[in-house]
Length: 116
Image 1: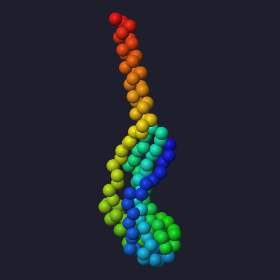
Image 2 (image 1 turned 45 degrees about the vertical axis):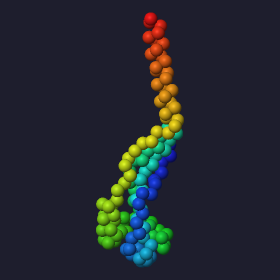
Image 3 (image 1 turned 45 degrees about the horizontal axis):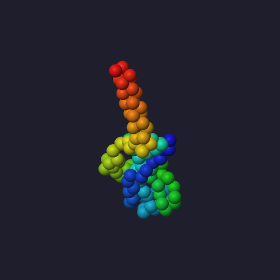
Image 4 (image 1 turned 135 degrees about the vertical axis):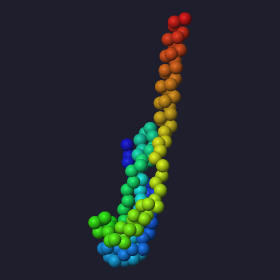
């Protein structure tokens, strides 16, 4: 089973970076967890977020956030709409389901036919 996060929304922030003090490098990224197996693909409700500075190539952790960054983050968090949690069955799943249904149907007909 592979787990990965897919980017749902990315926002450029106009705040100063707490590391390099650049005003044009901060990016806020919202990601949603995606699970994938041989049988299904599923988007979960789990959300992650990160703020990175493209100027100094560092991740800005919440401990280093300024009050301005905190306010902008809270606003963007309220405006963020995640994808609906869903599950998609792959072709292998459908083959297994149909095979089991055929076996059950054949068994029922065989039992009913032998009782006649």
